[in-house]
Image (tube, rainbow, N blue to C red; front, top):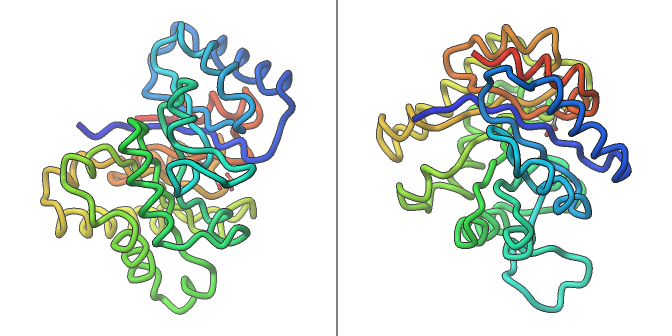
Length: 252
Ligand code: 13P
């Protein structure tokens, strides 16, 4: 079954105390309100503390922002999928454009991360999206298709069903320039067609495709109303309880 999901990606923001305060505020604001799955993608050092807070509340989930593409070994400073799972992490962001851009993560590495995450019982939220130049050239659908094929389409159907996809056009991330509802819907529908061609209609219908890129309390209702937009991956607006809960409340 396709689910609408709202995930907050804190990126490299907040101290532990600030982060826990934010989670506490969000939990309080959403108390007694029915909502779809809400995911907090927090910095690695806070995973355990946030796991503890979320354990007692239904509908809230914990994500890491990255994992390494090797299972274990001499990779100083890195964190493995196994480690994340061992502290109660449920989801992991894979292939965020900031990881691709600043840490030169390749499609081949991302495919390995996806495999390891699944093997350790984590649910990948796989990020894709095109830079501005590609959007302006009009080749954005082909660009995103390549990203999906290279890092996800080797999976068997049962594993693919555990993936959520986040479409995050790079030109909309942190820029205040969000994709229009038409642009988002067009790409989300195109992604669903790609999934359908590879895995069939039923898998495509069940795949959650989140939108990310300057999504905020104002534009979330329109974006989430699009038939192929299944919630959002939220950066800046996930750092304030009031904004983030407004976005959660915009789920269909
Ligand atoms: P912003 O919402 O700050 O544009 O970030 C989007 C994003 O990158 C979420 O992963």
